[in-house]
Length: 114
Image (cartoon, rainbow, N blue to C red; front, side, top):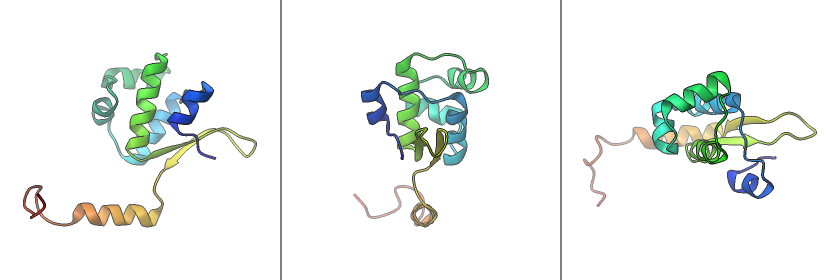
């Protein structure tokens, strides 16, 4: 069972742990500066959150979670089968296809797409 950010806002459980944040970043291969840009949370704040569990306002946690989800992470809620976790949103076949698409063509702007 996955839990989307939109679902957790309704239930009031929008928290992700510092470990989930770091694991999601590693899974989707996103560095802190890129996550900072995508979420609006500073890279230093993300570093502090991941390393020391520094408390963030709910809005900051939600911004991180939504950015990570947009970038390809999927959060799994804790249930009877196991604890909370994070995984890639795309399976191996989809990831290969995306990688192939990204490798096509030349530099940005060198194609005929308007």
